[in-house]
Length: 415
Ligand code: CTP
Image 1 (tube, helix red, strand yellow):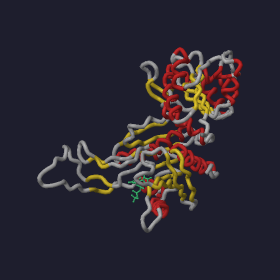
Image 2 (cartoon, protein in one colour):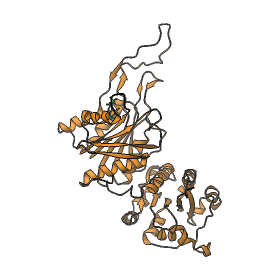
Image 3 (cartoon, rainbow, N blue to C red):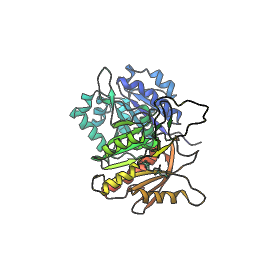
Image 4 (cartoon, rainbow, N blue to C red):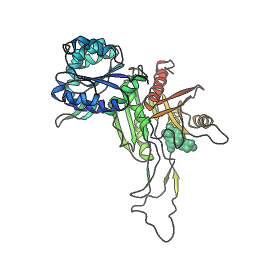
């Protein structure tokens, strides 16, 4: 049996400490050996017994506990990943200064593995130059400090500073275990628009024509692009089941026409547009304003009309000089047929749509839709074809973003 990856979950003293329990549960359920290292202040919010029961490991906070084991050195040295959630302003300040006044900061000094910090604090504390300087310093040393989420804070106030969703933190942690280099700040200064999910075309107030796209791949791209420093707008079609990616502006849409309007608007200022959404090719000509009933005349005939091809429209606009987007990326879900391999179809699609990059997934009833793993090919209009190895949707997103970042730095990315 292979050894479980060792994860240290550091918990700072903020109200969001209770959410660390959810991160812990997700990590243990997905096969990680987690040691929780709270600060003394964190234990005012969640008791050590909760962390011990959920992790199956003892919980200590100080350097004078478990002295014969030299815990403050050993825990960090043997870790494969450290996640700090919530990372409070005080904890990040102490980490930036290299303090070692408790077990968690001591662990941070001895760890040589990826460190992921998920901040949570009030907006004013996050925006304060002291905190921003500490974040910049930590990032310059290779610590991955996530962008906080926006929304409801402890009291009635809202703003930037919420802890990113626990699912998102656990996902990024798992990504760093397979790809420690997956989150460089190489997209800073870029505006990226990403569409995700599947459009729904209503037939009547209760029925629609839809597709099986879950939106997970587009969300993974948006999440990673934001954490790599891009200013991301996510146009999300029917993705209510997914947690909002932190640091991303979300516009929700339902139909292909709504998606089209939102994408065109957002593309105007964007350097990159990624069309990961599954757009319905057709919509009913008529939308019944009441539920369509069974009648003795047999089933209704539904007449469809073709939806605009948004990706092709973006390319046409750019060719006409009406759009400055430098990189337009499409997705293609293909199956082979008796005459053509799925890649032949994809090459033809790249030519037909005229986009710069096409991410190709091979699909079938048992492949890709709703699953957590994805693989395929990245086809470029310059003729290069790169295999995207099978991995989680986050790994695929990291590989695609490496290529996008490479296009902007004039280098080929990490593929
Ligand atoms: N797309 C789009 N507008 C549409 C349909 C698709 O912008 N009306 C985009 C998708 O977001 C994706 C790419 O085009 O990036 C390819 O989608 P796909 O459904 O595979 O392409 P189709 O043109 O519908 O081709 P097919 O004939 O295989 O259905």
